[in-house]
Image (cartoon, rainbow, N blue to C red; front, side, top):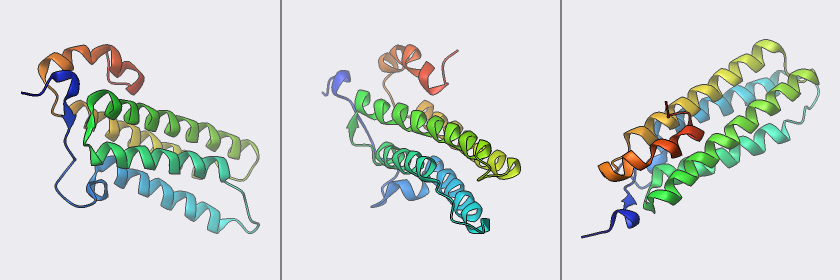
Length: 149
């Protein structure tokens, strides 16, 4: 029998690329479409580098969470880092509003999409098939994910 400390989180589904249907991934792809649309609306080339980098880095961690096959602690670390990158992306949106490369409506739509992605990621972490002993110990680990009390 496998030790709980070495428990492996299973993939989100049995597809070759499980992240393609993972709710946080689909939500993040919506955010990337919003950013792309905002870039196309700009008459002059605007650099959204900080925003794009944060979103790409979050997407890498979200894909890793969906792929699973990681010990619980490493899997949770990927989820935490993804949330941190998404929070960083929200700060980059604020910077773009201040620099007038995004208008307030565009920025609000992007931030709402990022918040929805975070919420979906938190929901998936909360639904993970963890042994009861680990779920109880997870309470203090969930605060950075926004899941705790």
